[in-house]
Length: 184
Image (cartoon, rainbow, N blue to C red; front, side):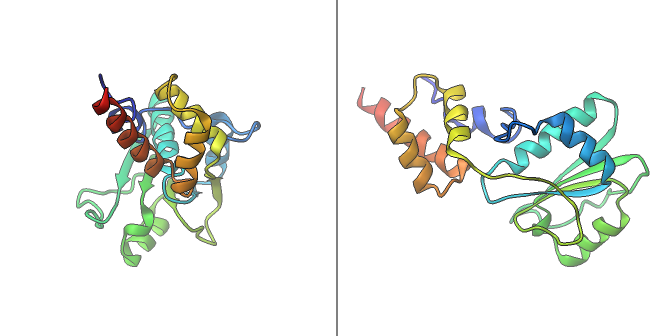
């Protein structure tokens, strides 16, 4: 039996971003991003920043915009050699803080349209959205992946032990599912 908490099912972009606020949705964020050519998605680790950024990529691509997605982490901290700055190109930068300062400044001052993810807000860049993990959203996501999954008290324990980091919580649920199914 396949583990529903495998990253195959919940990695960034595989499930839609879940807004916790009633008045927020992709349409309002797309409009806000249109008004601010350079903006940021801010939030802690595992709170959905990458998932939201990938939603932007899907939406922009569907309406014919030229989009380029750049991902940076501990293993990849350099801008690609083929990076160009077209007037109509939208750059989506995931892991902006991983870049050296000169590359960050280059992106900020050369890009015409830029949405980036950060853990701490950059003071002069408008905030497009702040991701804030909430237990109710976590439960909703878990139920999407595994409707018959653990009781809510177990989910609360996992969520709290992860410090609200959805990614860490899903890894823990993966391990729990594996242990449970090895016994059966």
